[in-house]
View 1: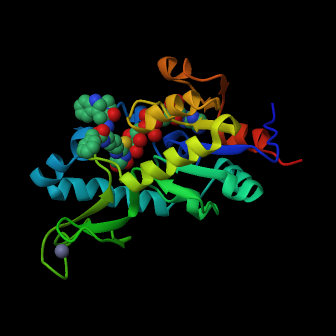
View 2: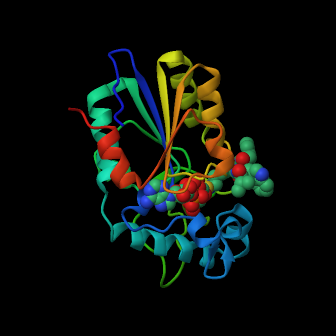
View 3: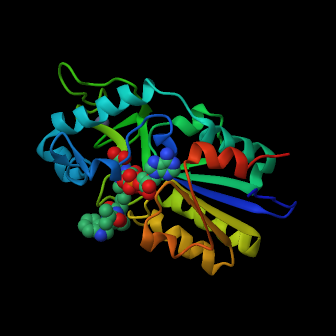
Length: 241
Ligand code: BV8
Ligand code: ZN
């Protein structure tokens, strides 16, 4: 099956851990939500950071190491190639924080859950590039005000960047029935990202779910459900010729 965009087609892609899984990055569901005995939701939370910043920095430091050790896969490249064909008629909202989409050449990317290789002062809040793992020695503090520095990640219980949500919502509304919405490699458990398919459908979009093992409840909200590995399905689905 191949996706054939016309000159009017708009495409919004939402990716989850299943796209990076093809590069060897572990998914959340695959770990049953656990990491070294901790519930990920507890570690990826403001309460978790306040209670035990060393453990939270260990979680993110190890993921920075892991992300630097892998490369984008054919699925990432197929998404970047579709963007190159469609230009401003394309937008990618990713739940993944690993930076692999940008390394594959994607530019029109909204990193709705934050970015692994950015940190920010809990007080000054301005994000800055940071690929340090902070696994050894003292934890980072702000050079300007001395407060704690945290990963620039949207944790459970924290709101997403309103400008990100607005950019995605505007894209959906502007596209209307010309929109094709693709959710790829996501279990659709985490809101508000999991609600994008409903917003797309209510504006008349055609909806597609591509997943190795689609979540039953989530899949019922899509018109097309393609079962398979994203690294294999996407190059065929998004092939240009
Ligand atoms: C918010 C950054 C309000 C962290 C992430 C009850 C209690 C507490 C909270 C809530 C609650 N009910 C609802 C909530 C809200 C909560 C939520 O939805 N919780 C869920 C768990 C119930 N949401 C939030 O807290 C959000 N914020 O609502 O705040 C608010 C509003 C305004 C103002 C203040 C507050 C914030 C959510 C963001 C959390 N941060 N990431 C980090 O990454 O370290 S979420 C994190 O988990 C990931 O980013 C990702 O989004 C999510 C996991 O989802 P997936 O990417 O889908 O990964 P998963 O492993 O689940 O699935 C992988 C899929 O790939 C599977 O389907 C699998 O079959 C498939 N697959 C595997 N291999 C392949 C494949 N597919 C293809 N090919 C393959 N090879
Ligand atoms: Zn500061």
